[in-house]
Image 1 (cartoon, rainbow, N blue to C red):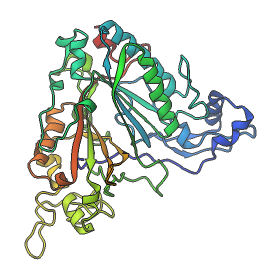
Image 2: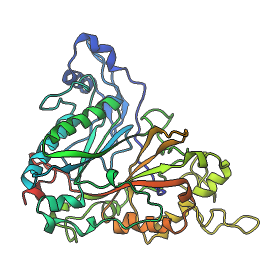
Image 3: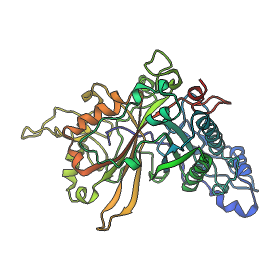
Length: 428
């Protein structure tokens, strides 16, 4: 849980509810068209900032349902968009006998399904109607390849060096059955039914070519649940993500995306990124026994507003050398926020885009809850590995978390019109 900033979206939560028109028999496509015709204004982040009055025959979708991410583009969706309220992470293994040909056909099916669902359309085959009344709800579907995929498809020579397995860390208690995988899919949306609809469609599309290896469900705060956009809180109650790199920064692309050239990565990874996925259990019973002051010392930031303990507001630069009247560092030497700073790690940075999770309670009442950590970087060795090694050597937070599953996936660039994700790899 490195100390970086989320990219919140400005949305208006109080627009009219489209559910009230269901009895009129308005189709999902017509409803979407109506929302556009009424003058719904979308900001650059995809959130509504205003809308005109609807025609009398229909009520427009609220800003929550009408948000739409684009499938085709330079990069895949689901990387730079703001945190989504619902998410599913799922890994697949190719079945016995399935190789490059079957993988190409699968990615072609998956890409077409993702394109349709992200546009608010029904799946091409056997749509379940789960999301028929909803808009796109900012749905994103992202695809990646694991280390084992390349041997399974005879493409070992195209496997990036950056996809070498992650090293072992002292905080690891990994379940191999919930780690890695040939193929990885990330699904996010601002509506739970829209997200589940996409998950079910992707699983059905796998057919006989691939089987699910593991699947995890997550959530974030719903857009509009706070009075103004703000950095998300995690299940420890901490504002989590203050120093995330931002797309507006001049070096953002260099840190997060593989360059087209020159690059040590194969050509098919141009404009792609590497996703590290970790299921991090939070030991909440132990954490919640700490006083607020002790929790703040562990993190290095105030719990109330995320400001550094050295003073100021959430985005104020942390004063690492500031001391109190007794000469003690105001931000403890092992504070999580101090250790994860890029300037303390040779400039290493990653774009965190996680989901919280809760999978019930153990038999003794301990919550199985925490963070589905997803981070993006152009080079995982310089990004995640550099920071995690530093955390491994003395992070105060480490005694309150446990890494229980892990994966590293090569996520190629976005598909152009008429292409499917991974086409340059599978047909190159």
